[in-house]
Image 1 (cartoon, rainbow, N blue to C red):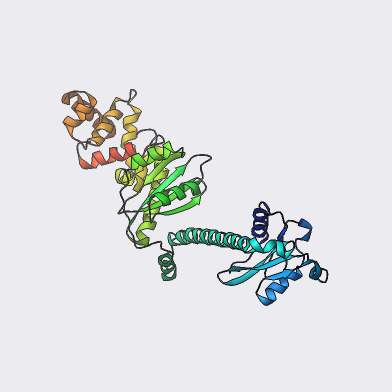
Image 2 (cartoon, rainbow, N blue to C red):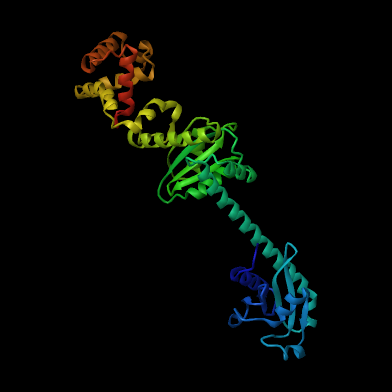
Length: 366
């Protein structure tokens, strides 16, 4: 239920008195003065207002009548309504005969300010409730039918497939401001900020977004985005929660292994990201040993460059040689040297996979 407060009451007073040469008072539903052009009267009772509240109608008090009422000056006191409910009283000081021509106009203006403030309060509540609800839906126990039903009622459309994006923001960048821009530009988006420098954006999978162009657009608008991790379409809340975890791992992987790469795609790095949370596990360490043995003897980085190209071209010899600008015989010699040092054969699937994971997981190698 909406009620007048001191800030709104004083705003009504200030706006009105900027036009009228008379003092204005705004009283609450108990007749207490909340805002006034005479600060000393704030938080005192107004008998004229109590008459309005008791009768629900305009009360005019002339100079003669005012002498018999406590704390009352001549003027017109008008009921303030919101949604047909009496919420307070607007008082204009002066002789009623001089005030009648514009008293109703002043009341209409005051009620418009009340309505505007109520709408702002409703919008603020809705935004806050949606943010709280989205955080609950993306938590581990977010499948509660009550939460899903409330999300439907608030128009959040939890049934839509969505693609999660996790933004890492630079210093001085407000996640809330970026969230407002994204949700305004892409309807039915969800935005959740779990940390000051982080923003999860879940856009409908049905919309089309050119990710590089989006980053360029944000940069042109002076948004300080350090990097963004892009997931894959997720169906249902459980799928979206998994997607949230995946882009979190992808962002952490990119921060350590690809510090200069701003756009990270789960489609591109799915396998190394799968292993990244377990990088300290002994089994993963063993997978990295073959590449470490190569790097120990690769003083000029030639073998590492060859491996990068080999992985990038899916083991296609001619494409790899062309990319390196060398003859296929030279490539074959390098691959034999890699096999000798690593003790795995990069021409086999197992050998190529072991070396590929090393290239993808070791910081500073990519």
